[in-house]
Image 1 (cartoon, rainbow, N blue to C red):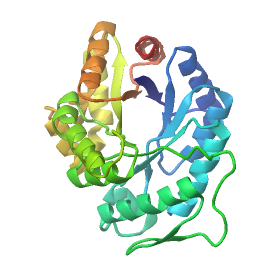
Image 2 (image 1 turned 120 degrees about the vertical axis):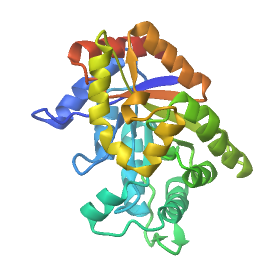
Image 3 (image 1 turned 120 degrees about the horizontal axis):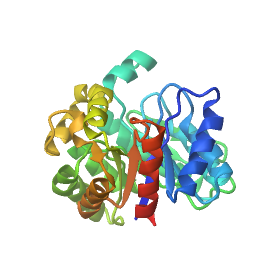
Length: 307
């Protein structure tokens, strides 16, 4: 069981330098992994590779790269390069993305997302496991007239998917190494998410999947104020059906309802609830929402729990 943190630096003079500094702090606190989101800014595999080189021993990962607007050949090159740079400590996270960001940003229709995810995973696994691909699907083609292996990445790249809906969980259980659920409370994990992805993996003859659960949370004495900030910050996700559904399955009405906020004892108890619900790894995000002092307080506790 590992405990990690998502790092999202946007207000620094140099995002890469600031992220490396934070990652060193996280490692010093005893945290085991650092994860990086993917938007239209910094390239998350590059950021993970740099951090992994600069902070030896820290596991690094992306959570998560949308499959729309990308191609398995390019993502494989990024992931293998990051894996070689970190000597086996890189974890690739993929996502379906959203209709709004896909169509607004890339100008391509958000159509047949589950079919695209399936084809993307089939082609990607060929590439990361063998260094070659010969895949011709309905939506994607991936073929390698030249070798696609990156020396130093021979151990392969763990592939996880930000899946929470029934169809995405089924595909992820069949073809990925695990999942990256977000805004999914212990109830949704235990009753819906973990059983579905585990059953799909078993049916496909694959090992039990990793459940890397991302949790918005902070240790603070100002719980009401922090939860209000989380509610404002996470409101965007309430407009996305998959997130709205998982919040409801978790027993919440607003996305902020599933944030983990409280003192050390209360937050530690919630982390244990996630473990009991089937989480193999817990990654906290938004730990800076109540200021730097509470961020450091949160990381100190999470480092203890990771140990």
